[in-house]
Length: 439
Ligand SMILES: C[S@@+](CC[C@H](N)C(=O)[O-])C[C@H]1O[C@@H](n2cnc3c(N)ncnc32)[C@H](O)[C@@H]1O
Image 1 (tube, rainbow, N blue to C red):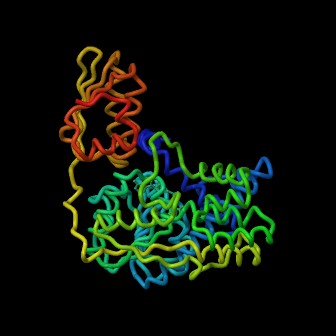
Image 2: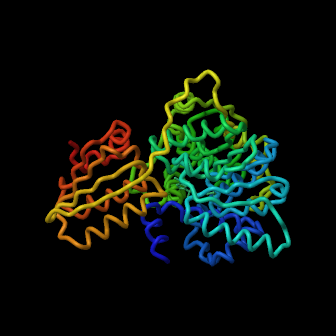
Image 3: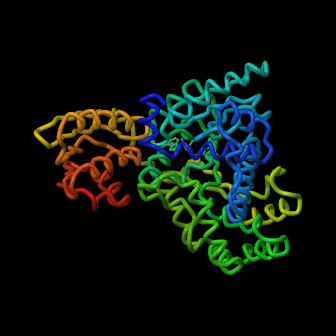
């Protein structure tokens, strides 16, 4: 692994979870996914399971991801948009799908993913003698400038598709993403589609469909229709064992969670309030959502037999695709982005004085980490002072570097000054405010 790749992985370990999707699509019988996994050197054999519980969990993950990927393909086509912005594209084989052939496909993900996927897809298309309008771009979804650069020369209306991103975002990251989406849709037109807000509802229903015998699964799916609180239904139908399996299944997707994940767009707990809170959040950022049952575009699944596919379809009557567009009535927020990043570090004895400027996000955090480690190597570190008066924003990638500083010194020896309101909120919501002192 080269140095930059390593720095990126340490500041944002989440991108490795995307390789799991590719393996799961391969497992579901998607031939291009299998070929791509092989070319990436991923090990399908590594997906055999050590016990029955893990096997069941594996099957429900495969079915869940296959359902999401294939139904999103159908929903993308239904928008009729000629330009598809896949944010984040991960390692899926979407660029190779037939329906992409007459579209412009703008694949966006963290730089590490885009740099691996771009050349691979070019090579695969060349091997097939296919010419397609497909490009890969390194972005951070919270960084407007990076997204806008990926869209240079694009023609609207756009279909921006998001699968497997919102669950990794904290509220401040979500807020930045929503502002960026609104700005882009206002400029280009089009829609943003996602199933992410209901991810835990999808996992719960698919776990019930896959893990129970068909009669029990049918009863569970019927109960889902009556009761909106899916966690309660799961517990009533399947007891604690299913809950622990579900938790294990979810944790395979949560990456290394050293910051508190979770945000207001994710539907959890009492659904009525959760849906209202998510819609309020969208409205606060000048967006509105229309909800369509996923069952309306139920794909054929390689991972489930016809009986279970039908049960999954019935469960998907209660899960929605969110189609999000600018809300004409809402008051747009102030321009959130664009501040250039900078870091400077000085040593005074054992004290490290760090000054941060602009935005620390997945694109800039590797530079922050490199600067910190270089300085730390040359001194006997006891205290860290971080001047944040010119810092506009810090994402979880930047917080990971802060965590390394916190771990490197005695408790209470990382002091922050000049913290603005946005950054203060981020530190409070992620629990970091308790680990540092703030002037
Ligand atoms: C679970 S994967 C989903 C990818 C793909 N859509 C799929 O279904 O497999 C999560 C993806 O989000 C990307 N990601 C994480 N944080 C991001 C950010 N701030 N901006 C853009 N992409 C990000 C990761 O690199 C990873 O590829």
